[in-house]
Length: 139
Image 1: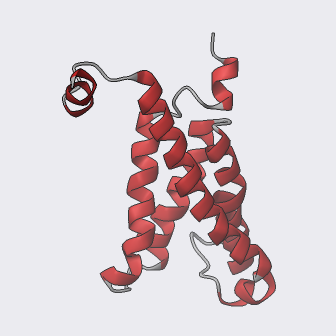
Image 2 (image 1 turned 45 degrees about the vertical axis):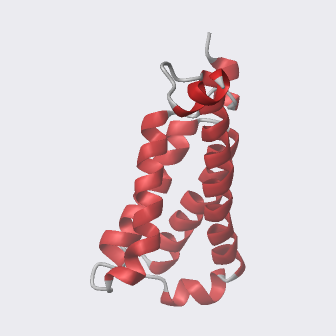
C-alpha cells in the first residue's frame, strides 16, 4: 500500500520516472514531427511550388527551413542531442505554421501546430531528462 500511496501522492519527484516520461515524450512527439518532415521531403518538388513564402523568403527556402525544423531537429530532440538548440527551430516552425502561414485559417486547421508549439515550449522548459545524449557532456 505504501508504494501506491507514494505513487498517488508523491512528496518528492522521482528523477527516474520523470526522466522516463520525458524520454517517452521526446520519442512520441519527435517521431510524429519527423513524419511530417519526411512527408515534406518526399513531396519537395510539388510542395516547393505551393508552400507559403514566409518572412520574405521564397517558397523553396521556407520549405527547406520547415524540413530542417521538422526532420533534422526532431532527430536531435528524440536523442536529446543539443536538446534545447534543436527545439528552437521546432518551436519557431510551429509558431510560423500556426500564427503566420495559417493565421487566417479556422482554429481547427491551426490546432495541430498550436499543440506542437505548446508541447515543445513545455519540453524546452522541462529539459531532456537524464536519458539524453546531452547528459554525457554534463559534469
